[in-house]
Image 1 (cartoon, helix red, strand yellow):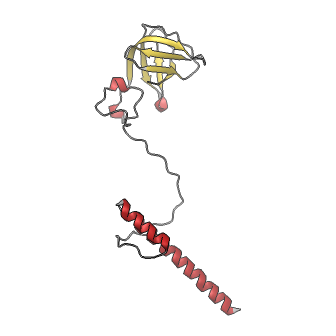
Image 2 (cartoon, one colour):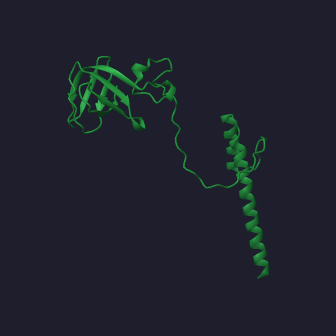
Image 3 (cartoon, one colour):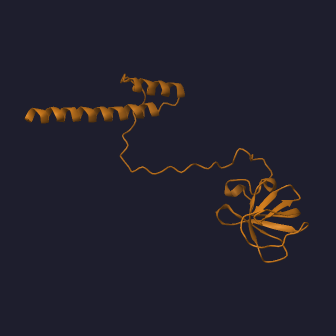
Length: 172
C-alpha cells in the first residue's frame, strides 16, 4: 500500500514539473519577435520535442487574477489623417483632447424627419447630423446651428433661436 502512494506521488510530481516546464517553454516562445521563429517554436512544443530555440530568459511572473482586457482605442482612426481639417472631421474623430475643437457653428442646408420622428440635418459643408434623442427643436434651412461636445463623446445642437438643445451624432 505504501508503494502505491510513493508511485502516485512521483507521477504527480513529474506531471507538475512538466507543466511548469511547458509554461516556461511557452513563455520563451512568446518573447520571440519574428513571426516565423515564434511559429516554429510553438510547432516544436506541439510535437513534443521539448527543444526550444535559445531565447533570453523570461523572469517568473507571480500569479495574479486575470483581468479582462479592454480593447485599445486608436488615437486617430485611419479615416482621419492628422493633417485633416478639424472642421471637416468634427464629430467623426476619436482624437487626443489637444487636437479636438470644442464647438462648431454651421448653417443648415436641409432638414429631413426620419421614420422614427428624428431630425436628419444636412449642413452647408456637407456634414450630416442625426438626432439621437426624442427632444423637440425647430430647425429650419438657413439656421446657423451651434454643435458642441457633451459628456461621453456625445454632441448637442442648438438652433441659435432658443435655449433648447437636442443630442445629435455625426453620420457623414
